Image 1 (tube, one colour):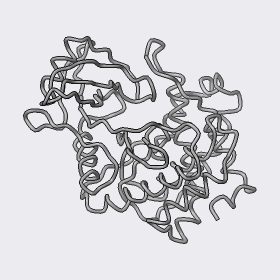
Image 2 (cartoon, rainbow, N blue to C red):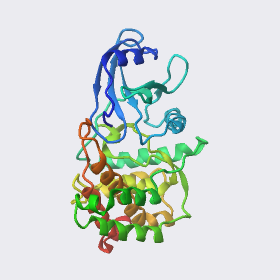
Image 3 (cartoon, helix red, strand yellow):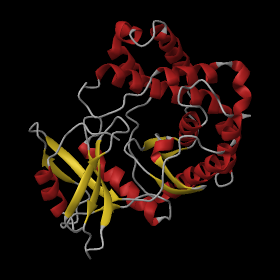
Image 4 (tube, rainbow, N blue to C red):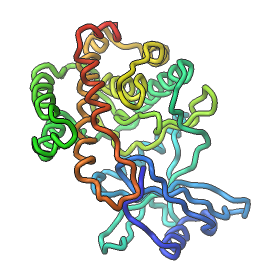
Length: 330
């Protein structure tokens, strides 16, 4: 989450009035993340007792045509008992609205339920186990959703993003990076699996997209990269996000074991899925290396956003590519 587009108090107040949630009390920009503009919204609530929501404005990486899929998915998963926030529909029943931003461009915005909990920065094995369970519950629950969306950040897209950075741009991050990613992309092209179970996946389940109270998952959020892809790829994305420290230098085998154990307690992996996890994990590392490198080079200097280090995922990539670490998924 982040704030790329700035809205004044009058514009925010007018926008909140379109929803039956009371009057705007306060709005605070949220700086974490890199994709959309977000605010923490407090209102008087319909009864005057106060209420809290998250307001999201979708920026360039999110297509407005995809919003019915994303927002419908939230409501479907919430109906299935998953810890996912519901969308707040406006007074006309719409799950999102389009407004004109300060730059004159049309921007889609949505209001979603605020869920309690905090995002953990140093997860315990018990917390990782709970996240594995919650992810598997989502994978089971999406079977009845009936909608799909292509993954617009798949293997071919990673190559396109990195090529747009150019060798010179990648060299500003690390002199060896261009050579590393070129060799790895060729490997993934040759070894990517195509015959594994597919379904709707979160595709971005970082610790900051999970809310917890103690060892309990209270919310899975930010489904705006959700798509139809290999289900086990989502496990690999989550593994890469949870099992290393922020620098990507230190792998925690206890977190890894707990995450996979929790997942398989609800949805056991097939022999084929487990065998593919090393390659899928390399793909997960490359996906976030590519988007982080692109954002590192192209994020506006005045954006209220924390840029994330691409090398943290280059180090994960090196870990997964090392044959000595193949036993992680055994």
